Image (cartoon, rainbow, N blue to C red; front, side, top):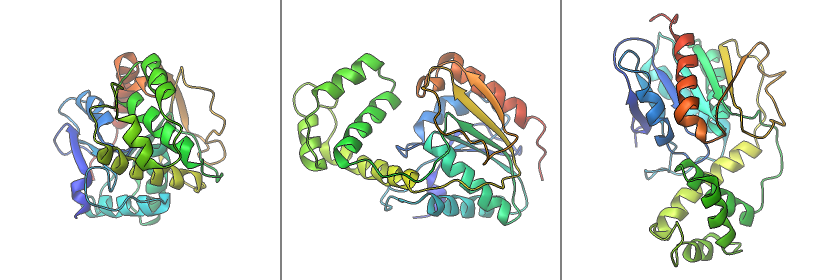
Length: 269
């Protein structure tokens, strides 16, 4: 499978430096579709889909491996030109490491945008039962379900400790998951679990020279681990919404305006 197939065009055309949006922990490129459309026709915007999400590739459980793969793809597409990177949550961690790898080979990222992304430090990976419930919570929230419906679904889930019985029980009855096949959930969970492992075993490196914008969601919990000391000099803005709702309404409009404004001066090389 060519890594070109991991790129989903989500907005814009033309010869202005493109913006690449790196998937969050789910591996899905689709949360970026409304964002890409908000840029209009003047700039190409691509969303990056994770290996294994909707393809036959093996999920990747290491941030550096993902970053090297994406950096190699961008170097091939833009051997003598700038690109810009955006990453939401876990995607910000991967985008940061990707920008470092591009820098090390002379293809700088003109802009790095981290959206509600926490600086990683190595920590024990949560146990399987917790991961299973986090997966469902993330999947439902990413789909736009209200918080009270997410909580109700989680409260009704079984306390299984293995994926097979958990997904079989979770899709039974009349829950919000009933229309989903257990096999699909298991495949998407494999990607989620690999990315959680990657996040919990990664330490962010300092040294990036790219202009950096950190976007914080106003209603997200306080960030325990900021990027201070890793991204010195980064700009910080706060936008309306929580970790998931920033991709709609006023939060989306503000993110699009902040990113578009900072990319306006980036020239084609």
